[in-house]
Image (tube, rainbow, N blue to C red):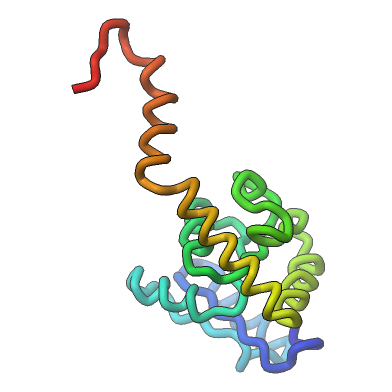
Length: 157
């Protein structure tokens, strides 16, 4: 990404066992100033980070994909877990093959190079997240899945 967009910065929120490896890799490649690892932060801080970002990378983030979409920031996601059920290509995000870091970088450059497209995708992702993950929709889906599993005669109270 930095070969095309030299001022790009990667911020990885959270903390874990790969912290030192990531810092070492960035230093080895001459990108120490381009990697920020702020550690674990409160949810409000993370929400602000997502909203301020130009692109969110969804590698293996589970339900945090919904949080990313709610930020109205364009998402590039690996095609794994349930990402392809939530992301519609070039509508609510960009999907790339699992572990294809070159495709991930290319997609990031594509969005950083076309802010209008990135903004459109981010806005559509937020609308989609609100449509399919609203409390009313999630409650209805869970109820439809669970009611058939309950004993006969069960009544909702």
